[in-house]
Image (tube, rainbow, N blue to C red; front, side, top):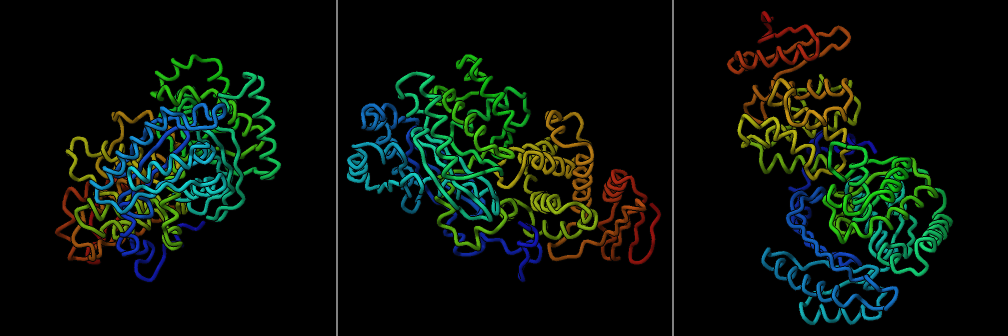
Length: 519
């Protein structure tokens, strides 16, 4: 998808018009959803820009509603009591927050249990909350929409694992296609008779049947669900991967096989302590890893991406008009941050236009990151000056931002670090820099120093800062300023411009009101 061009409109040029200014988007600013799953019951309250919402509130209770379901045919009695208590709590919380009515869906455990309808009726009688029990294909569709919330226009196969089921859904060009469900949830597999040998045979036969129904899938495999995220965290441990952010974490098929073997050969308690994964989740990980290894072997994906967005985000996506869905989640989140926290709203767009000549030879994907950096360049101004650069890097690399690969997080973080600091040496984040090659580290430095200088010319968001002329073949940078800008071009601004030119390995010329200054 051509993200930059899709942002163009008559009102905002390259940046478009922020969607959170639209009344239909503001109606989505705070939305509460609840997912009553086979393993957990979770409430999420989304807040912020509708296209890329922040998590205003997020609470999960591990109820294990589906434990023993395959043997008894009913919901786990202890889990049922815990789930009911959780829903009472979530109702009270939502009322305290002044939310519109909660949207609640229940998945495999409630739809498969004989007492599922009775449980839903009890919840409604006691709390007034209506639970929508969805079938497997609908669960697959909502999970796939959650992936589209973070990756608009993406393509591939979404695999969502819960406690009692596993679903597949195709996505292409921002749409959900074929869907299929199965009973390959680890809670259900744990109750299977015949031990490990019978379980592996059942997994093999079921995954092959799913492949026959879905057909060849050689694109990206998106992994949704707590068990998949736990496996990804163990993969990070095995690889000694430095950035512990699960969303957009990538694994190769070979890595999945290696991690499945690592899990099989390790003591579960040791893994739990090393990763911080809960005991309830870790108990299911060995079974889930058997399923994932078979899925990867049969479907042969080109690459594998972990998605923290799933059914709950899909429920939010369901409420969006298409014109909101088509927007870039990264840019919308950064616009919202600028509007909320920057000192002058709208200056980020002006700053991007000012530095764009330096970035114009960069690929479109990195111009997009430059745009995000300009929007975020001033949102951390309240941090103490001694720590501001590191705060910027930390926020960029770990914030809830959709549409960012891990390497792009580091690129964005370095650019914002250099917005406040000439040097990146000596920080506590140096172990992350190598997620970028040296050329991209240098490019992020140039972007940051260009923003650092441009911020010195700050007047009003509607004022013209000046104009850069960058000739990369000649390694020559020229800055043109009007005579009105002379008072702003003081010695600190001059020093920052010199630092930018040094990072570009460029000669420098400055024209002020048509007169060339000595540099």
